[in-house]
Amino acid sequence: MAKSTDNKKNIIIVGGSYAGVSTAHYLLKHVLPLLDDTHQVLLISSSTQVFSRPACPRAMISDAYFDQAKLFVDLASQFRQYPAASFRFVHAAVTAVTAPSASRTVSFRLLSGDQKGSAESITYHSIVLATGSAAASPLHGLPAGGDVVSLKAAWSAFRAALPAARRIVIAGGGPSGVETAGELGEHLNGRVSSSWIPFVERENKKPKVEIILVTGGERILPFLREDVAARAERYLAALGVRVVKCARVVGVSPPGAGEENDTRVAERASVTLDSGDVLEADLYIPCTGTRANTGYIAERGWLAGDGRVETDPRTLRVERAGAGVYAIGDVSSFARPAIHNITEAVPVLGSVMKRDLLGTGEEREFREDMRKSQFVPVGRSKGVGLAMGWKVPSFIVWLVKGRDYWLWTTPALWSGKQWAKE
Image (cartoon, rainbow, N blue to C red; front, side, top):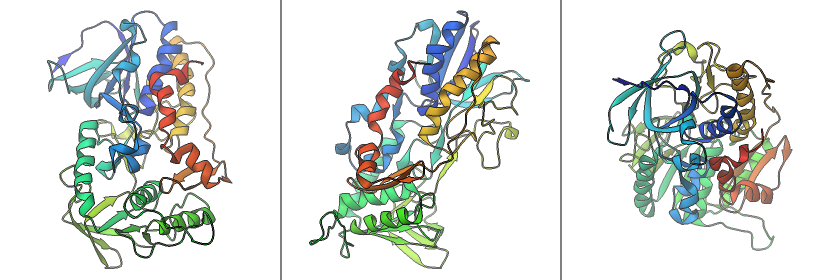
């Protein structure tokens, strides 16, 4: 294994999505200029492109729904605004991170360039773990250590199989499952409206494609209020989606159908429920949560019980790892996985790292807003949600999220403009 020989004090960020990209911009704008020129920021990502993961439920159906140049953005180009000596992008899959008490190294396998496939390691002065999480379905994001090539391959296989599908089974009654069911329902079945009450939907009893959403709870969207979840179910019914409650998927045959990779994502499956019922599916989509991408962390003592990195919720330091180690985003235990929690935490992490690196400065603290906020589009024109505990009209959910699944927010994030002010 080759080892970096430069004399830089490397501030390494592992992960090139919302948390990693935002943290890199913030440090380059507000922390690195205060340090001497021996410091540099290294961003290590397994993908050369960054994309809007929340858009997957709609984007996976067709390229026509989004401007692909906005959905997928070259990662390295977003950092050309900074001096070359202050930033370095490494296209690689991280394989190991050692503790500060040991060698303080990050090991990785290069994924492009003349040395593609070779193993290297580099010493870190500080490190931010921002590797996010992987969804159960390859349709809903990048696999751990994967890139957009694998995501697009999964979408391509799914799209090829979609016209022939007559029954689609979706497991999971959370936002991902509801959004996926809603997008497929509107795309395949259209929306049925009442003929005598404007803007009021009625159940589509004869859908072109049978779409079944299976949830283990007594209702869908358990994070939201019961009346809000009930409205979402009515919206789904108008799209030809049938909700099966208090049922859990206990087996899928053949094993791995719908979830392992692009070669299995469009495979026909027999889905067995805990009731003993078996649903034959032309397409099966598991939307049963995410798993933190921590496979490269050998020190399992760094992890919390749910598999995320145990992180001080106020400072985002990984106290179990030792000085100079931080975690943010879905891989971190600091807060509920949500984009708004990431954007609120980035300035806090920046202030903490500035304090640790300079020995001076005010250290902020992160405080998660525990009021319930969640927006869930149901198809291309409806949605439900809460904002700080208050019920939000369907139109507002569409306006803020449902029209393009937050894509309108990403240019400022990817370019760093959102972090222009400290």
